[in-house]
Length: 291
Ligand SMILES: C[S@@+](CC[C@H](N)C(=O)[O-])C[C@H]1O[C@@H](n2cnc3c(N)ncnc32)[C@H](O)[C@@H]1O
Image 1 (tube, protein in one colour):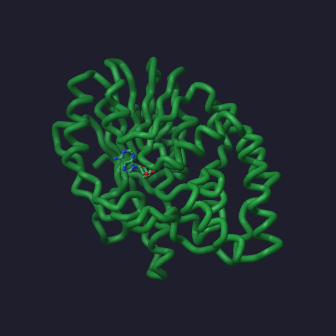
Image 2 (cartoon, rainbow, N blue to C red):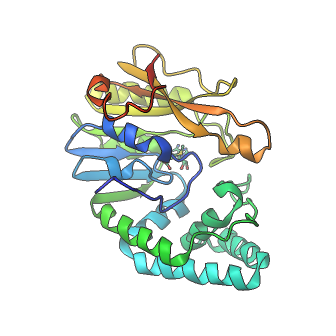
């Protein structure tokens, strides 16, 4: 995979796109890598292992990844049909496709919705139905442009195995010497992907298990958005290094029409980050700091 000039193929809430080059540079060479909270896969092209396992609890998302990997032309054609329908029929087409997705769970519908909904926010209600509205002022990416991106990603995904699974189940296959990148849903965002709160204590227990197994990991957690603190942090003793890095502005704050906060991501590692080696490469990122 060539991680330079990467365009997202699936736009996903909580994407690590803006910090992907930095996080990617922390990833070590290992025989196998795991990414059990894959979402929109912003870090995926930066893995350095020849075998990668990617998982998520949203079945339609995993179905979409598999389709992009195995049938990129079909995905591109499916997006084109839906996009052309939106241009000719207007907003009713969006809501018809949204209804269709909620009934049939067609993964290409999900791709279309993610590309045309308000601020690209993936949102499900308590019934598991996609409920974000059409972004009226944006037409959605041109089908010819998205096709190029889909075909490029398909080529990158040849060594990736996708699993629809809870992260702990995905990680049962991890062995000593493997690497895991973990980007769990944020505390305080119930209902964004799942109706129930993400269990941070169970997550910390899993990190402890990976430590005892001799598996290297990098975790990103929403560190601080403006004055709000979403996470209390990974308990001392579980990690060896941690830092705060700026990510840009919060799409949720934008959506709610409040003032736009600067968002920082906390990055934790169970090994020492090669920050000094990276200083030159990331010299413009002045705010990266250990904390
Ligand atoms: C912050 S997003 C990951 C974003 C991703 N790194 C990117 O760049 O697009 C978190 C993801 O975890 C998934 N998720 C939530 N709970 C999960 C669980 N228990 N096991 C596996 N995946 C889960 C959500 O569906 C969501 O896609």
